[in-house]
Length: 190
Image (tube, rainbow, N blue to C red; front, side):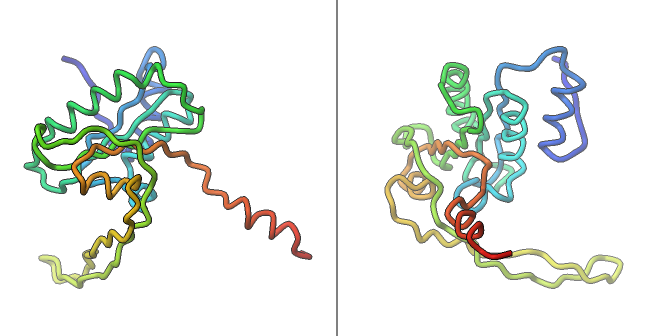
């Protein structure tokens, strides 16, 4: 088997592969499988989601796949199984040009998965704090720690679907413009 290794951010790797390494654009981009869910606010921090977004910006149907577990020993086979299911359907889906599929898989055995649920981003959030540590050379550094608070109870929310044993598929797009506030700002006498 042949492949490339690229040192860069996930979106840089997609951009470089498509513009330089590959002889033609691929039919789809599958980014992941990522350790840790990319639900709710987490999509803003996600390299996995940004790599899929880069593919979408280059005109390629794209998806991001994440497993709920942060453990590097976690069994990825269930996530791989569902990634293959979604990837096989991705080329035929009539998605808008500005949309990717964000797939999240709970860390449970295959037989406990209840199915696939189409979801929205939840309103969960992080309550962060930073732990001061000292490296072997005696220099201070800070390690981010935090608690993820799932406050959303809507049945169609991504975090809720995962908690209830479903694979979550959320169609997301990158335009973060608040159109209502934009209209209000247009009325301001600048």
